[in-house]
Image (cartoon, rainbow, N blue to C red; front, top):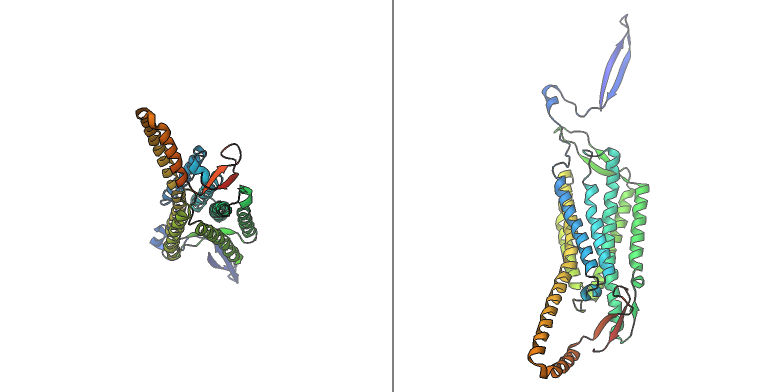
Length: 368
């Protein structure tokens, strides 16, 4: 804003007063200085990197969801509860999509559009994070309830709706807080005036201070989902890896902690540099989502493939033995059944209804 003052003189030479005019300019310059371009710190050059990370993370989420659907009748996937695996994929998909509004600035959108993107980013990030870790909590909690009853030699059916309540509560509270934040003190898009170095920065900021309270409450809700998932993973630490992801949950937490320890201080350091801040924030989201998907699904994919290969080799071996030693077939089958009975696990999970995806699993104890 530049103010020009001009004295007003009548034709007779009498002084009448001073006229003041306020003019908004990009920068105040003199002479050759006016040829210096202003650096608006747009995300034009770094935006393709963020979109690439977003595309990889979203494609990984969709791929893991498709894999879960294809192998939903496989014993490993059934034991891992495909209902909650799909929710984990959905949460990672939503979390990765938060990079899209993060990539918006006033070089490709109006100030009103940038303001909408400012609030869309925390909406997608918080909902995706809560969905992922509350689903993981409900999934492992259900498994712990099943095995707890099995240790007491009790037959029990644990449905998804029996453990979905914490998920619903965390999601409802999160959405309520985000809605209140959006209505009371939303983030808006602002751009600074060019400084002496001819630089201008665009950023999201609330007009008041109420957003700090909402931000703290939302952080507490998401941290609670993280803590609950870790508690259930710790309780499931003695359950076989085929049914429990406690080891991989722990590795996910370690990866998340490392990302936060490294990323958050960097964000604080470069908070005045929108380009660097965008790259670090996009990288953090990418690391978190891919770490969750990789540690939750890659071991299952390997186990499914290994079991299929072992099953094929075992079937070929039995066919060879049957043709080469027909006289000892009954003895071998009897010995195999006895050996299986001695090595069978104490807990077997089977479907209590017709169809492998009914979601109602019955626990039976004893050796089978």
